[in-house]
Image (tube, rainbow, N blue to C red; front, side, top):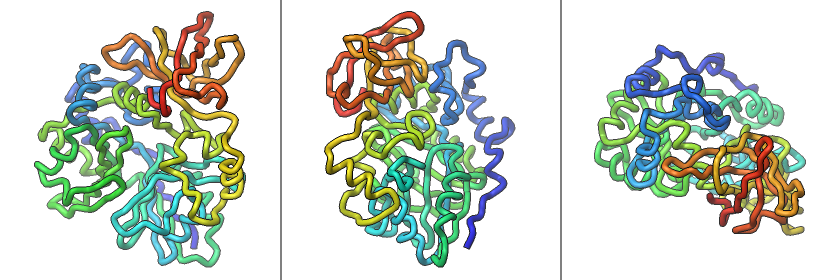
Length: 377
């Protein structure tokens, strides 16, 4: 059967929608309304840069609970009797082993082991959902649809119908439980649904930033109401500046920004969480297994801490202490309350060891930087 690509996914955001109205009323600032916004902050999600107190947004993420607008992220539903083994055949992680209510992180790869998408897969009773970076539905559906021959599989782009919020921080689980939005004590990679007076709400535990985190997915018409309910329960609204600072500190890449189809799966530095070497055959498995046997890739994504401003731009060159080009910056941010930028960069493997000293060329100047342990800034 052929895939169904929802036309509604072409226009996800209107400045008149209820979610935007809620955010605007709270002081939400868009990238074009702010001077000297780092390029990374313009990457779709969250669309608001900040809500007027960036340091408090960041502190809420680290010591309380912060709510990010992820409504631009791609949502795909897969149905049919063969849905789980079908997706298993195109992902780096073991989809077949997942029970209903479980999930995993994975890469969808080409036959050459290059990354076509960085996804989270959620197995439900009647369908399987894929969540990934904004704007990926058309390409991902086309790729998967190419391999549907006799399998009982249907693919649907649900991005125009459903949206997502990301609630994260040490207090996330407690605050959700207090307002009955946590049906049970969800462990990492578990998810459930809540049937409420308002429509269906999916609650998906994903510790994206190395701390408790939950994706909340509901109809687009209800996103504003859910946002308002969580803010009333003590969530602090967060924008792109706080999110990218936390994301880069955690070493978490975004496809389309830090990664592309030019990257091999192991270059993303997500091998432990997103790649299974025991699952058996899948598209791209041979080159990925060969790299594992040989020991390493030639370049790898890692986090950097710069010694001072300015914030590097995307594509700025990373140099060794001897002045040789060893990589490029893929995303960058300022940690609120600090004057030192942080960044993710794709570097030669020889220069990705913890505390390795490098320099970042920003225009006519060079700023010192050090590689952070385990990819975390």
